[in-house]
Image (cartoon, rainbow, N blue to C red):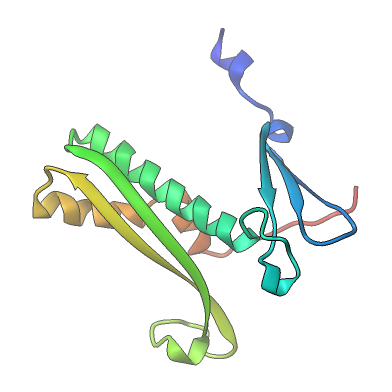
Length: 151
């Protein structure tokens, strides 16, 4: 099979979300992979799947973990496992001294990384720096544009 025949088109990479008229339970088709999303019970959902913010946090966690392994393999570092935990919250902007926005609330992602393997302090520090280079981190850290249209 050639690389061209296995490549997906942009339409194949689109994520499709379908929510019915009751509740928030949403089916997702993510490039041929079936997922569910929902909201917690306390906001009217059934908690049958992760919330949209949980999915966004999962994107950051998985991208970070993959990026760390990719870097470690390229540099032949003995990283046996990367575990990344991400929590999302909304905080008052005035409570964030290093944030440009000073009014309203801002989204804050707290990322905790566990690196397993026989890594020295220099390798651990470099991997921590590399975590900020994962593509999802970069996307969340810069201006984002969303184009919306009716089909």
